[in-house]
Length: 259
Image (cartoon, rainbow, N blue to C red; front, side, top):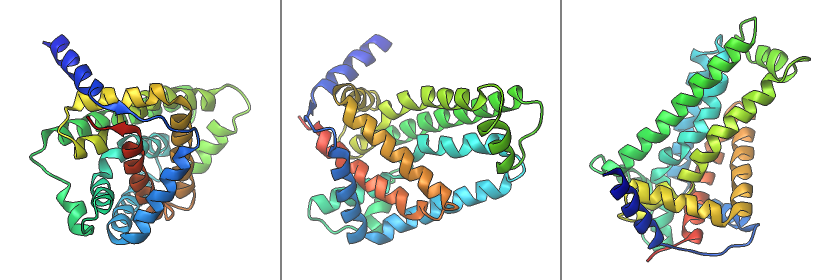
């Protein structure tokens, strides 16, 4: 049964073509995403405000337990594609010349679409796994508690001995790479096409394997802008997150050629 599902998903994925793009094309996605955000700011800024507020609440509730908060914030990147679903719909509406606004974003959250739910649960599971793995690595490798951000910087990032920070980064990259490859165009594709979850994931992997340099640049842009948003006490995320969401829609439309 599982072989049949995988074979069907592979055939489904192969029905979509791949457009060839230059290595610096992700910069064009950012430009078009910024145009969408400027033309229709309310849905994007509300999304960004809610997510930044959630991050602030998370930080406040765990301000004395930074040993797991570090993983929680980095795991935030793993579930971001699901949280941006409504903004993909806004970019799609603008592309089609249709009215785009808050109603467009809210209507994208269809509780009867099991594909969205399944994919969201899979990303949430991956994010939870990273949070637990990160906390376990940090607490088991250090003799003392990491309760504050300054403790994490002093005992992990700037530690004189050992390679805990390097191991933490390598482990995070090891988990984030397949999640990124599985989701980079999958969520916009699920919104836009009647394709199965596995078919969308296989298509996303094809995109990454056929465009390694642009996808590596895109991953770096996402991490860099998100880190910048977090470094501004989360205020920058109000703009960064919707900007990246709109840009991700254009990445999908630029890379995947519908059958």
